[in-house]
Length: 233
Image (cartoon, rainbow, N blue to C red):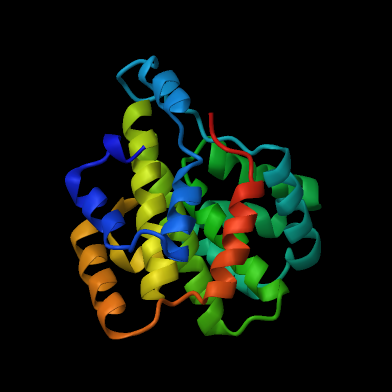
């Protein structure tokens, strides 16, 4: 599927020597993208999918109920809610039970357009329930914020753009993780956008000055896992 990418991405791929485990891993990883899948995507309208109204699904509701049952009166939660929506916080503090409090969160997401804030509160609760320190919690919230921004950015792309972006991001992520040894998002130029020039420079430097970040054993495990993972059609 490299043929659908800009020349810079092909250059990045070709930095990895043929016959190496790294190249084998890239081939298996990128093999999830198929001509059949691309042809199917090309048949889709050349415009973004219709925007979906924010909604709490069953999984969201389950997680929020768990949070409200276990940490509903925690000072940090009330403070975060107050920062997000002062009126909602007042209603929350006077609510009688979890069901009433859940209804407040539902309104924040589905009516008031404050899904991002609710997601961050849930992320913080996840960190606190795992006993993380404040620094790790803050990093987790920031990563959650990035994930949401990426989802929003991709929702504005056409189906073709989304597919290409997924291939690009997979290649960039593989090089950053297995060659450079950094979080792929350190080479982002924007939400969900790979700075391919930076990835090329970092990959070249890594190949010229040190061993790849992933060992041969780790790559073999990743190759086996990727081969067992169902491919996109």
